[in-house]
Amino acid sequence: MIKDVDYYIDPMGMWVFTAAYHEGRGYCCGQACKHCPFDYEAVPEPIKTRAKLIRATLSKNSTDAIHPKD
Image 1 (cartoon, rainbow, N blue to C red):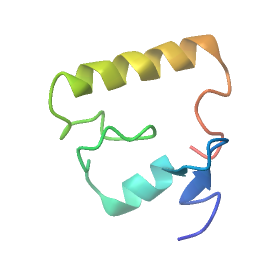
Image 2 (image 1 turned 180 degrees about the horizontal axis):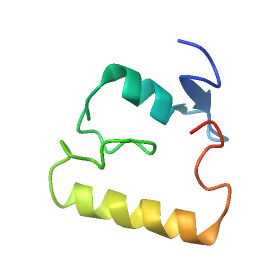
Image 3 (image 1 turned 90 degrees about the horizontal axis):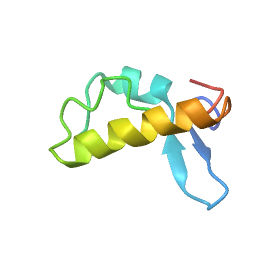
């Protein structure tokens, strides 16, 4: 894995996988990842709905809410 291509480390020190990493894997893992390019297809409800709402809220409130490497 390559830092800032496959993942980055957020201000809290957590690893966050990029959309490029997820696309390379080829499927949704079901963990409601921040940059899931598969529209959370394997995430169970109600977590799926919550993840979509959070993503929509972040993208409305900030131009840099989604990591620029996506």
